[in-house]
Image 1 (cartoon, helix red, strand yellow):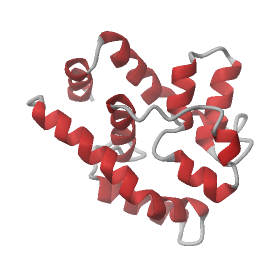
Image 2: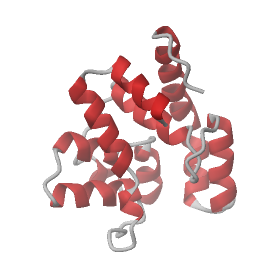
Image 3: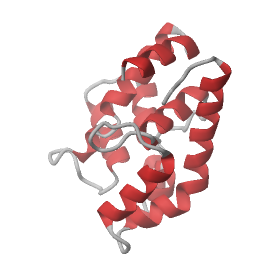
Image 4: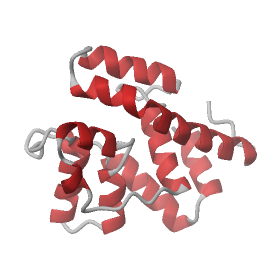
Length: 158
């Protein structure tokens, strides 16, 4: 974890590094039982954060983390998610990379291991399993771009 924090400081401005750290800490807040309303944790988390006065950029990063727009489409929630723009920046890619290369137990895993774990945890008939299959190219792209940036900066991220 400490290595990943040092990497953030080498790739982003101090403000962006703080934003990435904050988004990493709260991106899954929408899973909290009291906040889960729609079934789309990214949307529920962003709505909660907006409600408590969090910066709009943080809300948007949470709303769109890890290709949430794909799951929003599958759940019929695309219009609600559209309240926030997906910034499509290296910072956003780094958030997706962190989410897609970290196990639920906090272990570093490959993207393929993470995608497999998600499908196994939710089962073949769950919307989340469909989501991970449909979103795979977009998620893999963010992971690949971030890993290329890390390599270019001479950062060993494994």
